[in-house]
Length: 180
Image (spheres, rainbow, N blue to C red):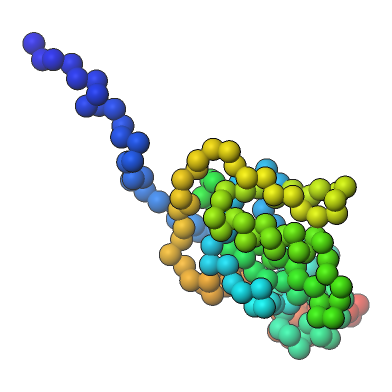
């Protein structure tokens, strides 16, 4: 009779996953307030881009010359890649203040949150009383995030696929300018 050895059947705690996520979709927007995230490939704060939201709140990447034509309909943001605890990839447009404008506590606290998420699993929520975003650090150990192999440029390209504004003839621009 064979001796039963339960310990030999136990799954080791350091077992690597047999598969990894495909990361086929990249969400564009601020992470949900109940979503724990880690940021990666965080660019310098000075690496900013102009973004435009259409009436349905869809986000577009705009060329600098077109953004100047749009005025207040375009806003500067730093594009920060992140991964959720569920291995969903996103690009968080962290708004930056317009040069010469006074600092905005929402923008500044969002940037601090993005930096904090490089080292810890966090979630970000609005604190209306304080007028800024509040960071909550996970108390559990979620381990290191599983990251895609994409470069920063590839992630941004995939996040904005089909949503690049580079001509005033684009339907979104025409709508914002009141031409249609």
